[in-house]
Image 1 (cartoon, rainbow, N blue to C red):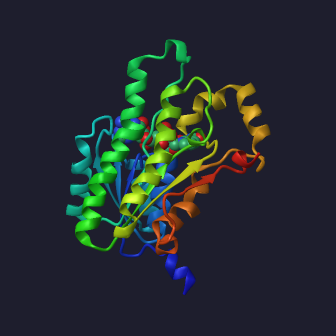
Image 2 (cartoon, rainbow, N blue to C red):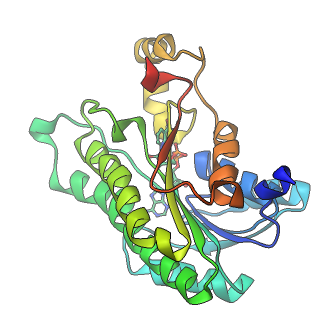
Length: 253
Ligand code: NAP
């Protein structure tokens, strides 16, 4: 039956940055669809675990700072050791640094590139090795951005990293599709999370953004749930290298 194709029962997922925001929303959605979820991040997962408990979701925390790629193998190894395998990786963890390009520092460049792009690649590589060894394919979902499509201003490393994410999503799909691994992305629009706190505190910017969103509201983490479950499930088995915008219509405007 068609709805069975969206079930994640028996699947194992790892979601980075699962303690808050979009990562927490995606982790909850995958668990509600039946997956066991490794909750990966540098901060405590108490809030996410409490939300899992409320509906009997199966999750466990994996402590890792993705500023350093050395943790990538460890994240995948810990997940496999706990749940006996891996089927889904969601590369969600990300940071943003704002500053005029004329004064932008090398540290603000490297910090963002390391978390948003470099670790995403090496974590995908570590996951794909497991997928290939298991021989039952796998799903990688990369969280991109509107700035994968648009230039933005005063966020040079973020735009570069997120533009890289959409390209890398295509490349990895090209290399791994024949092995049954689907690599796709989600580009969220303007969402209410810590990432956009500074923007939302500026009443002029907040309203200007709101006025440009066809849906007439900012997004919330639950808005990613449907796209995430779709891309993690057999329902999307022939979808490859594509990034779905969940943006309330922003890019179409
Ligand atoms: P958020 O609330 O700031 O969440 C970011 C997540 O990434 C947090 O869990 C954070 O952990 C984690 N993270 C950051 N650096 C890390 C590191 N070195 N090691 C491990 N985890 C790290 O923002 P969000 O909006 O949910 O962001 C999630 C993703 O969506 C990001 O990739 C972001 O670029 C993308 N995105 C967001 C929007 C938006 O409007 N909010 C739009 C487009 C794309 P800590 O809590 O410990 O910092």
